[in-house]
Length: 324
Ligand code: UT7
Image (cartoon, rainbow, N blue to C red; front, side, top):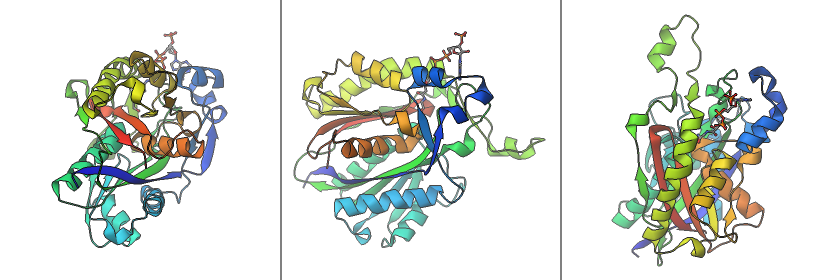
């Protein structure tokens, strides 16, 4: 079998529902402004016991169950995250162990909001190349911990949760060629404000918060990513009219709409809008958004979905997948 596909998708939403009203006063904003500029009504934040490890595990268990794959059949676990604060070893090793997997290869990747699509691309190539038969890809974040509650430009955006997918062999193409890249010249547009050393020597040590030049990221994402999306369609051999679902990284509802317009997606394409009640969960946002589409009856097995992930780095990755 020369092809690959996603066999199952799992999700875990952090349990605390945080409405805009809980955030806006501190940043001199309003519920109306946040909804209008970002599309976010409320977001999910983790409680003390909802860790990157526990949320990643819960999403993974669901993905395996839905895929009908036993943990012992997993040869490789890839976790995309920027909020696992133990720099080494990788949280992927813990999740693999917690699942009862048979000591698979396990490593974390750092591609920020583009992490899940990077993971799917790697998994697909590992299976096609014969290095693994089943790969578990996890996107998980606990961004509430590294969000500055006083930063007007980001306090209302970031959120917590996990999503996972099992990738395995297929007789027909189920994961298209990835279109990906990065632009290190724009490294400063979204980043951790301080590195760990700077945090430790600071007079008042605190978690290294995320910082973002929102408007510049907004422009880049809205226009450059639409071209990347069209290339991903082209590399799968389809056009916008052949697409069933559009599942971009849930960064901002206006970016999603701008991309859909720029790609001239027909109205028949169902568009992921999970950000409204989940917020922006970086590496977890695409699988969470897919899960929501299934729950709402907007995604069905066999649908062709365009995934586009983008964020800090500025890193991006897009591919067409056939939904399990
Ligand atoms: O996931 C990683 C990738 N991240 C993204 O893709 C995020 C991309 N960026 C965005 O989502 C948007 O840039 C934001 C939602 C963060 C901000 O929306 P915007 O439409 O780009 O706002 P802006 O920064 O251009 O600011 C517009 C105005 C300014 O006022 P003036 O200069 O027009 O008078 C800001 O001072 O809105 C003001 N403003 C606010 N007002 C109320 C900025 N932040 C706020 C706020 N509440 N929180």
